Length: 251
Length: 218
Ligand SMILES: Nc1ncnc2c1ncn2[C@@H]1O[C@H](COP(=O)(O)OP(=O)(O)O)[C@@H](O)[C@H]1O
Ligand SMILES: [Mg+2]
Image: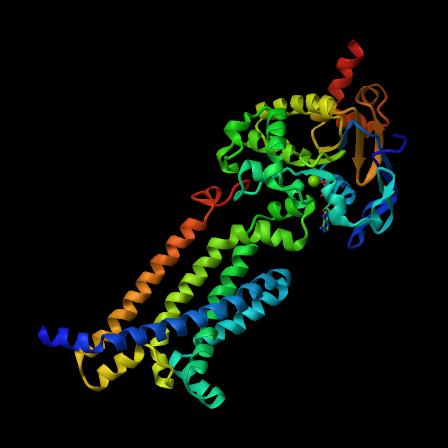
C-alpha cells in the first residue's frame, strides 16, 4: 500500500524540437480521483498517454504501482489500466455486452463466463442489464454511451483508470449527472482515477486532488480546498476565476 | 421456335460444361485476387506513403484493353486457362486493393486508439475493429470485381481458355443467333445471380450495429 499509484521521475517528452515536458516529477496517490487540469495544449493528453505507453518519454522513468513501465510489455500494461477517451470509442459493430467485455476477453476469459460481470457493471452504472446488454452503441444516448465507456474500463477490474476529458462532449445535464455518478462509483470501487479536464468547475467538483499544468510545467498539486485557499500564483488565481476568490473571502 | 428447342436440347450438356468452365475461371481469379489484394490493401494502410504509388501502378493495369492483356499473356505463359486466370486476376486487383485501403483508412481513429489503449495488439485491432467495420466496403469491391471478371472471362476464349465465350464466338462465326444466345444468356444470368447472391451475403454478414448508421461518435 506504500507506493503511489503512478509516479513520474524526471520525465521529458518533446515533439520535434519543442518540449512538452521537461524533467516532470509528479506523484499520483492511490484510490483517489486526481484531476489533471490546464489550458488546451499544456500536455494533459500527453501525460495520460505516457502512463499507458501510448507515448514514450525521451528521458526519465514512470512507475505504475512501484514498477517502472519502460520494462513492461505495453500490451499487458494497457490491459491492466482502464482507459476512457473523450470520443467514447465504443465499437459500433459490437453489442453493449461485447463492448464491455473486450478487455477480459483479450485476457483470455470466455464470453460465457462474463455474463454475470456484464450484469454487475451495467447495474453499477445505472443501466438495466436486461434492457441494454444486447443493444448496439448507436441506439444509446451520448450520456449512456459514455457510461458504457466507463463500464468497459472497469471490466477487467484494473486498479487505475485513465480518463481523457470523458464528459466534455456531453450535454450539461448528462455531464453533471455523470460527475456525480463517478464520485459515487469511486466510493464503491476505490480506484485510482486520473481524470483529465480543462473545466475547473468539473475538477473542483469531483477531484480529491488537482494537478494544475501550464506549458508542461506543474504549477500546483493540491487538494481542491487548498488550491482555493492558497493559490500558488497569479496564474492559478486567474485559472480558478477571480470571482471565486471574492466569494471565498466573504465566507 | 421448334428449331430453338431442338438446338437447345442438343447443346444442353455443352452449355452446362462451358458454364462450369466459366465459373471456374472466374472464381479462381477472384479468389487469388482477394488473397493478394486484401492483405496488400491492409499493408498499405500501415505504409501510407507507398499507397498512392502502388495504387497508381495497379490502376495502370486497368487501362490496358482486356483483349490486349490476354494477348500479352501468350508470349509470356502460352495459351489455356492459366494465362486467362493470370490476366483476370491482374484486372481484379485494383478495386479490391483500393476498397480495402479506403475501408480501413476510414475507420474512425478514435476506435483504433480505444482498441490499442485497452491492450489490443495490432493484429487484434485489425481483426476485432478495423476489418469488421471495413468489411462491407471491402465486399463492395469484391462484388464489383466478381461481376467484372465473369463478363471479361467471356474473352478468354481467344486464348483457348474455354468458358461461355466459346459458344458465343462460335455463334458469331456461324452467324447463328440461337448459338449466340446459348452463350450470352447464361453469362448474363450468371452475372446477375452472383451479384444478387453477394449483395444478400453482405446484408446477412453486416451486424445490426452497422446497418443504416455507419458511423457513430463523430
Ligand atoms: N503527435 C504530435 N506531434 C506533434 N506535436 C504534438 C503531438 N501531440 C501533441 N502535440 C503538441 O504537444 C502539446 C501538448 O499536447 P496535448 O498533450 O494533446 O495537450 P492537451 O491534452 O493538454 O490539450 C501541444 O502543444 C500539441 O500541439
Ligand atoms: Mg487533450
